[in-house]
Image (cartoon, helix red, strand yellow):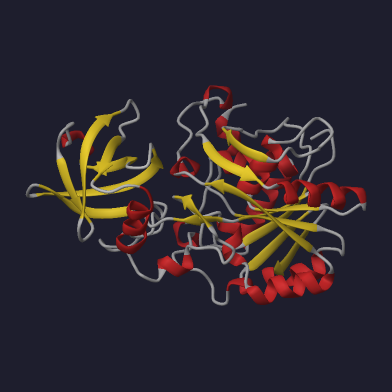
Length: 346
């Protein structure tokens, strides 16, 4: 499909720079046969007893650093672990870094440049490994916010809280599963009281989720890889929900990609660890997820293509036009939409 089909004009002032407080006060556009303007806090009224929420419990690591190579300033964002001691990173100015260079990051974290790849990333081998390296990253880094959220050099400590979902448990993401940023413990308790069950998957989100689509046709785009795990108890909870007629509600596109990546033709989800580069565009046949809670996404992005596949291209174009006209807030810290899966044919 032509990428231009997924383009739209978005006023810059609608790009949210901070989340709403409290989180569940964010606006919610319900997209089905008609459009409904609600709030995230209304979710208990919009879901039914027996439905199953599936959430991503990956924890965002604060992987953005400012430091030095000799006397020159360096900014580095760790984007993918290579082994217990090394990470691939996006660095500025990356072209000036050479294998063998030593960079100082954070307060006392040092690394040596070992290699560069065709994507312009640099491989940094640190002066510590394993749990000790992870602890240093947690203590000294800043949140790797997407480029459309503007922050001063050094980051903002508020983002350590604001850009972390409340259910985050498994460290490994370098971008937040942002639909979960709307949830609060109070809202989850109200959903449980409504009879809506809860289960978890882990999908470690990479910065590739923000990578622009630079080709003219979706068939030419190469999707980034992400790693995850589906626990056996989650696969069993999905089977039980389907058996009783409950709907599977994915909290975010990361959950949808995880479940669909591990689904058989009849919708049975296989537990275990996996790597996925699933690229969902219109025409994809969904096998597991019935409803999707997600934020409003970038034009021409793989995520907007995914929601168009899920609910229909024309329906989503109309929904986004409505959201822009009604001044909804967009992207990671913005408002949300609850999507019904379109019936075949799409």
